[in-house]
Image (cartoon, rainbow, N blue to C red; front, side):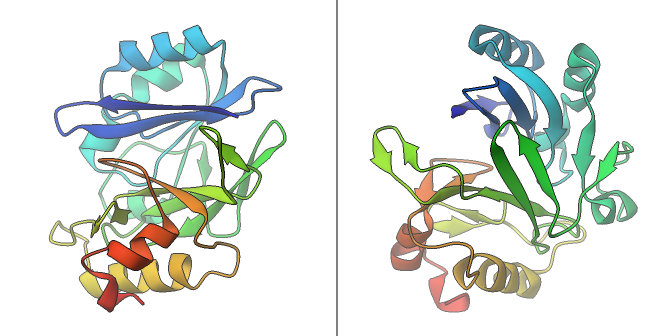
Length: 209
């Protein structure tokens, strides 16, 4: 597996470079700033970008979308609901919906629709990753600004809805039969965590468990 977290932009957004170590195919998730740093990291890895994926359309996750897709001549993929809500105006090459998957070499990245932070927020997960930094995992989840280490995303922006946000965490993550406690969670800000840790320690757990 290729995995690199870059903290970019003025709001310290996590941009992820993720893909297959065998084929070197990678996706760029949420290029929210520091485009030259993202490009340099991809080139140092020897990655072959196949797409830019967005968890949602807020500026701190999208500022360098145009730079990355132009540089590598790759498609943009995110939710049409996010576009139609006015959260992000750029047309996607592929509109993603729940149940879709993106094939990155032998890695399948599956799409979940998880509104609440914004109308078209998405999460991406893969069960094909079984090891991370020497530890066994059952997979990983890119959660955007839905859930963080010990906390949750804001719902007071335009298009946000706290009840929807809690429902998304509960139904799409905590009680999703495809996920379990040993999934690594890669959020849009701050440190990595796991589903199991958030079941135990998240300060808002009573609202989604």
